[in-house]
Image 1 (cartoon, rainbow, N blue to C red):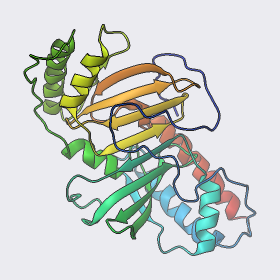
Image 2: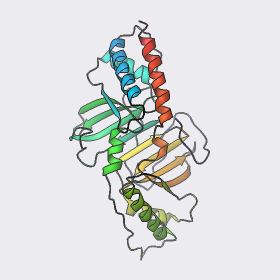
Image 3: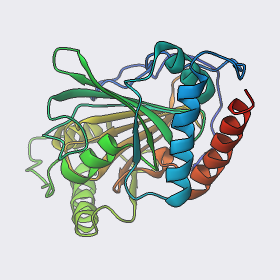
Image 4: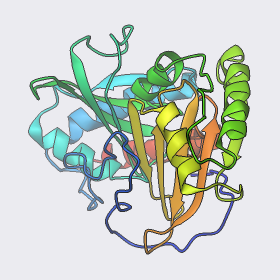
Length: 297
């Protein structure tokens, strides 16, 4: 995916996620169902007719709306087991996975009973598998979404979290620069809320003179949000929503799980997890190739 990255990292193969530190956040995903690196299926594979019909629908919808403001949704829960298996093969598994714990009724994007949304990007950027579970673990929705960001993440980014963060009294804390950084975050968040998340303001802890006490105090006032995202596009990267709307914790790790870059990104959604218009155009081309190939049967 064409995503900007501010510093070089040491890439690594499959491995564990970064070690847990003292900051508590929504558990970040590592596995989503059966979406694995695909084997190449034959055009006569069972389920090919169902998958071909789904692909033709996605191609037509994305061709008519190549940069959808809201994700295009295609339910797949009713597909046969053979079609599910074939769809998993042709879609594969991409760079980004996520978990969302909806903080409020989901305003029509998902069922109101949703307790956990599991998301896995396919091998084609901007094409996502989304599985919705109820509070008792029952699967209540299974869908393909096509767009820059899945609807559940977009919905939480727009509606969850406090919209007016404040700087609490720091007396009694042995701090260096945390209060002034907090003032900067409050001002940047106010601008982001006024612009509905447009633009980006980055607070780079890796370059600022901050102490562990500063970081702990800032984490305490920001709190924990409802979205956790894991990306392997450029090494390992975690993106976690805080309790303040449009304020995200973004961290990059090297192959030894050492933090290379630690930032707050004050924006609607950090760009590292967003599929670009070019990504979607490239994915549309691949979908057409797959559909044409399956039609040879």
